[in-house]
Image (cartoon, rainbow, N blue to C red; front, side):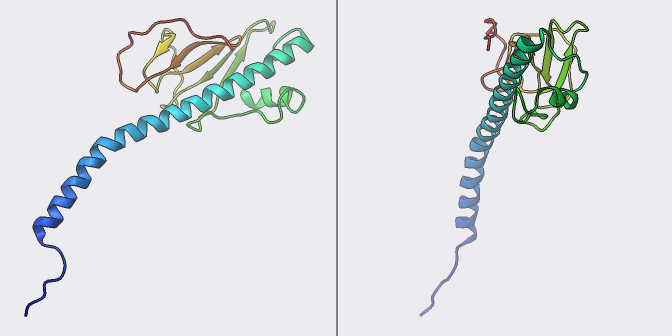
Length: 160
């Protein structure tokens, strides 16, 4: 009597094909979900920073006139925020700038690509590489939806 052990080459190829098909379908969705989670964490952190900046402005009648986020931490911690987030969900540093009089500020996350862009702002974009921009507590540009969709949604951004 002959006992066969193991799988035939055909059975192994069928299993590999099925696993490859499942991976091809699942991986893009998983990557999109990861970027949406990072984007959500970034927006939440930026809202927290904006709230701390507003509290600072109430007490000091102006926003901090500093040039870097690390300097901003020195102004806001620990009175207005316990620990200032210095990097976004993709581990890129935030960019902060205020005018000389401290009447307005801009807080930026460079997004997935890590590069700050100087292009015209688009309120709602579907490109996770686009900057997330908050001016005086209002998001003037932020990515939403699935990456790669067309920019047909141009509704205004939401305030804090």
